[in-house]
Image (cartoon, rainbow, N blue to C red; front, side):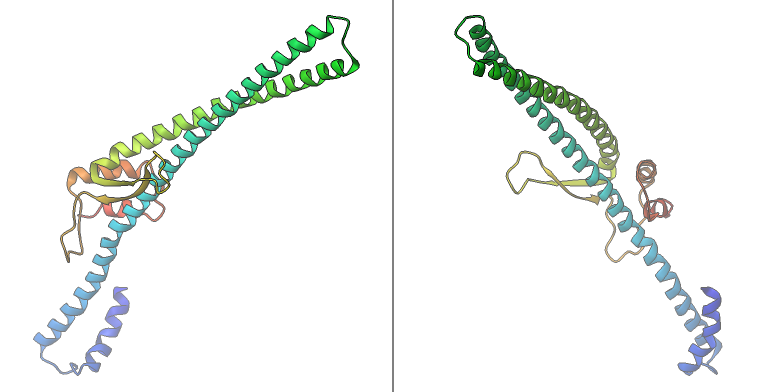
Length: 224
């Protein structure tokens, strides 16, 4: 970048009529142009702060959503398991009544057919209950993993960010993740805005746990 800049210096000076300008003026122009290059680099460095914030916000939001999905899966599996168990119990009551009829002499072929159907229903609902139980165990493991990851990241994020959660617009009790903002404010009009030393250490710890695909957090953690 700098080599290209030096090639264009004479052209720029000629355009502005500085080809024969005093040395002091040339130095001033040169200083202005080089400072402009430094400014663009500073802006890029400043943007890494926002890129990093968005990356961490996205990761945290995904974990919040994953935790919520796991919680819903647990509740759904518990509901299906409870319903299947209830259906099994209902069919067993019917079976006892049918068996009682078959013990007598007044049963009909329809009674035997009813017994077969109830037996089939019991097996079906019992299988559904076992499947729901397996799904419940899997959902609980997923919920535990998601909650642990979320708690681990949230503990560090809360040290250097303010996390904003919103109420569910549909009135559900679960709060919805919104965004995060740096606790360390950046002065107005300041391009470079390094973090305090303690916050840098926390940011590095956070970066180790996320996919810093744009390298925004890695770059910002090195900003002095």
